[in-house]
Length: 464
Length: 152
Image (cartoon, rainbow over all chains, first blue to last red; front, side, top):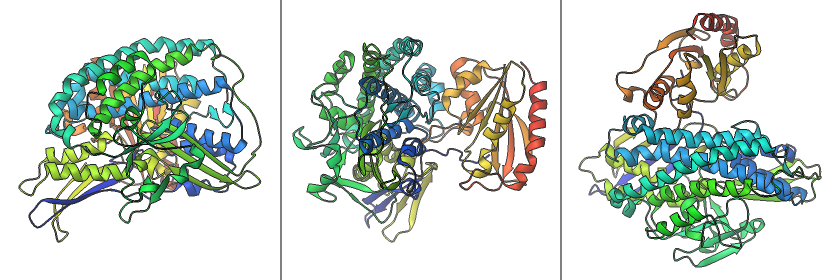
């Protein structure tokens, strides 16, 4: 057996630098995998891009399908049929529900239920299953709901080929619609009771709320005209920490507001808001950013939850968890709305065209934040360049600053405990990073934390 | 019911032996009470179908040992669950942890066997090393025999 076995999430390392007095001076989050997908695809026909790009990740292939298909729509210069937009939205929501369920139940709930100082051997899905089997079963069911919906729509759970340039390859049948609708009530009940549990539990984590990447920053995401929660389309919007609009551009103009810094100690690039420069242009994306950007979610239960969320400290990345649960609720409600659209079974779900321009940019909101695919092709429709900016990359600067803040709050040279180091991990976990996506490589994510003395000697380390 | 699960990455050389051999089995004529699954990795949500099976046969690649060597052992529930604990940053679990989760969440777990095939090349590529390739007929025979003799 290959141990560790997983081939999905990526390799990473955190270094914490102590000063002469033993206080944390600096901390960095490094991704130690080389990127590759942007190069692999050069020379391929652009129509292959959605299925090629979906291979970047086994967790969020659907998100890459969406952004990629939208970039191809732009190359073909087509407007896809309304029923196809509904169907793409439903699959995107199913993806967000299953990915958020994975993040919350499998990765973060053990910390929240068992405590940050619990035995690391227990602080995982197995420990969760022992301590609260009902909650673990809920996590399994919610994941299954999302994956089953993706499978019903796309024919398979991972890397479905149903989302294509110009729309989707097959319309929705009434049987499939009813199958998905029948699963919604149970999923909704799980989402509601999990939110109730979480609201009751967060009072114990005030220290973490105060120190888990709790600082002012810009927030970025896709925005629609109604200012409701937008996960598929819209303008690219930056807001300031106080909610004021900083910039809003069409996705095709993203390079006017975003630049990427290449850092010496990590393969993960660091995008920043161009007018403010690097690193002052740090911004956050994903569930927390999306909650902070909108006026309302646009569905009744999620809006009730959002009103309560507004009472929380919106600067703390700890509340990514809270925002994730609200998005699960929203996703389920919105899927129901979309499945009830009068034209949802319409068979006009795809348009065909040859490429009509050499550049195409597609964006959607992935579970972890805004996903950008930018393609360039030659006269024959062959790829000449791809630039992918992934949610985990957008959050890179904020993750690094969060690691430093937590390390300074919880680590000193007296005695480094697992609980201290777990909090350093946990702040990264709030962002739910997907390193295989962000470096476009296939690998695993066993975390390696090193604490370095002023001379560079390793004074403590932990590997998971 | 017997559930046969082959897991590994078909694009990482010998790592793909599990899914490959289970696909071959599924293509052959097979008893009606045998189900096949091919996966990149094991995840906690598999606990539900695992709990519903009488016997589960896992097939995976192994890193180490003589290339092509096949081993099979019966999985038991660990006395100390942390021995099978998954990492805090990953969503995958190993076969023994999956049995634990099935027991904890659904109150039952099946008899389970883990077949391992020692590989030598796990780099990017969709072909097997010669040692793994030559072990395929024996692996298929052993799996068919185990299926025939297993509880259902």
